Structure formats: structure tokens, C-alpha cells
Image (cartoon, rainbow, N blue to C red; front, side):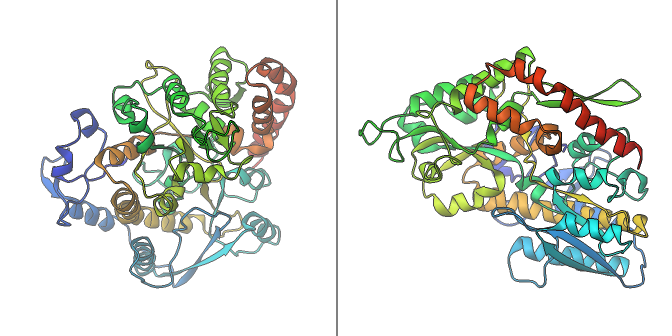
Length: 489
């Protein structure tokens, strides 16, 4: 998603280097009064509140006769915030903003919004469509389980809904680009659900261990574009130690990194690589298996040499005690979903910071964040009788969310309650500014990601060339099934 314009107070702005100001917005100052910003088109100075009000005024009114607009939302997660509906005001900013958004849209369009939460969203959608029953209008589900429903014809091609704009202010256009195949798009992310941000993989670091080991300032490394996978490895090796002196690797030791197995790919994606990427010859989209390119082999070798070394890293899937290592300043780095950061603030008294993922080399020129395949995307069941109405309601909810909900979450929850310094605020902007959706994880039915991960965890990058040769035919068959299924819809 193109980086959104946010608001940093003048006092904060003065503390941030000039180059950072070109990519970060502004937040409310301590007085609660937001600074002014100048319209690029008119040169007129506007307050942030005026800008938000202007966007809300652009939401078109409609009369859908009191229609019950039914949202079906997946609830399978222990860490994400669900921002689809709220029963009442309770003083919590996310809850109250969602409540006010839905009530505003209800009034604006003469509808009533209801939410059904489930851990079987796609099963319910499939049964509804097969029965020809109009049970749900908008559905939010994890990306990695959506492709079978799309292939089965259970979802509407969003590109056929003329009322959907894909305006980059409230649609995640990275997801729109990633999930469009030969002109058809069956699911995408927008600002209605803050999990579009919560689902970003994120890197955290212990300020205590940075200081204790006299390591370079990670923030300055990011700004000077010297934050690379090699630099990360150097710092990990410096910090790792047999802290309890018992000569045995255990939770009393200090490690360079604590993470889960899924973050192998986040580090790979951070270097600009993909296991699977899409390309077009001008008439048809094609998908390329990228296990054995020279760069992929080199990147994988770098990542595996760090994560497979048990003296450097703890994989929490293998050693659950690893979670506590970062909280107790026994790990320099920690990689997990951004949505986990609130719990970290509750569990960790010492200061930590947030970083974008390291680049392949200093010449890469950009930082990129991997989106979790368990992030939620929106879709519309094909049994919906009026997709245009659904699109209009979706746009209204998304526009309101861009004006108020995104800011409530990003500026108040992330920056206001979680970020403890101006540097972290700046890093959050960089981290969430550019996102990668790797087809290998998002389209799990293509059967690549697990094969890659299992192979790399055991053998590093040594057998990627043979793995490419072994899997290419089956991969191409699975991809073609998806393309053919889409073509017939």
C-alpha cells in the first residue's frame, strides 16, 4: 500500500532528520491539537480535521431501505484486532471508532450492519453459495485459505463491481496488484480491518543489548541504508553468549534472534526476493518458480546460516521458551507480526525498538515488509444479489476508516501507546510503507512454501537447485489449475 500521510507534531518533526520528513507524516502534539498541512493542489492551509471531514463529506448517500448488511468475519487468531463491528461505545479508541463508523454508514445509506464471527468462514460461504442462499454480503478471511473458494466460483470478481474504486488511500494496492490474475480479483485488503497493518511481519530489537554490546545504532543504519542482512548477522554474532556459563544452550543464554519458522521467508522477502513471482507477457499473467536463481540461493544461504545456527537463534516452534528470551533482554532481535507488539509492551519493561527488514545489500535502495499469509482480506460471496450495493458500502466503510480508524490504530495505538521514541515512530512508517505478498505462502495449495522451508531448515541452500527441478512440473500444474479455474468464472 502506498504510504499514507500521517501527522507528526512540529516539536517531533524538528527532531527527525530531513530525509525522514519526506516519507513520514505528522501526528497530534501533546495539546491534542493537530498541526496544519498545506494542500498540494490549492496551496491552502488545512487542518488534519478539515481534511478528514472533507473525505467523509465525499461519501455518497444512498437509500437501501433498511437492508441488513451482513459481515462474516474469521476469528482464528490469538493476536490480531478485529475492527469489523462494535456493539457499543466503551471508551477504547478502536472500538469506539469502529462503532461510530458503522453507525455513520448505516445512517448515510439506510442499512443496518451486523457481524457474525466464526472460525469456519469459507465453509459457511461455500454452503451458502451452493444452496443459492444470500446469507453474507462481505466476508473477511485469511488470505492463505481464500484461493480454493475463489477457484470454486464462490466469490465475486471484485473487478466486475463498478462501485469499487481501489483508491490507494483506503485500499491496499499492493494486495490488489498481487491478487489480480489475468484481470480478475476475488479478494483484497482495505482499511476496514486494521489487520492489514497488524499482519505485517516486524523486526524488534533490544536497546539494552545494543548498548551492552556497543553495537551500531540500528536507526542510523536504516537511515543511511546500511541495514543489510550481513550487518544483522554481524550484530547477532556479537550479542550471542553463554550468559549463564553452564556450557549448555538453554533459555538462560543470550541469542541473536528469536522468531518462528515463518520468518525465514520474511527475511528473504526483505531482500526483494520471492519464492514465486508474477510476470506478464502483455496478454497473460505467468507465475515463475524462483528457488534456484543465483540471488535466491545466496539470500537463502545467508538467512539459513543465521536461523539454523542454534547458538545464534531460537525458533519458538522448536523451543517455546524462546518467547521469554526477548522479553528478558536475552535476545538481540525478535521477529513476529506487528499485531503482537501490544502484548510485548505489557510483557517487557525494558525499551525495545522496531525496524524494517534488512536489505540484501546497500545498493538495494528500499525496505520491504512481508505480509503474513494469515492476514485477512475481504471478499464477496457470489450468491450476493446486488454486488454494486456491497461495493458502495465497502467504499463508504473504507473511506471512513481511512479518515479515522487507520489514524486511531496507527497514530494512537501504535505510535501513541506503543512507540516510546520518535525514532520508533519513524521506523513504523518505513516498515508499513511497502509490503510484499509472496504467492508461495498466500497460495498454499500450490505446494511450494512448505517444501522450501523444510528443505532449508535441514540443508540450508545446498539443494535448492535440485528442489526446483523436483517441484517445477507439479508447481506449473497447480498454477495452471488456478488460471484455468479463474478463466472459467
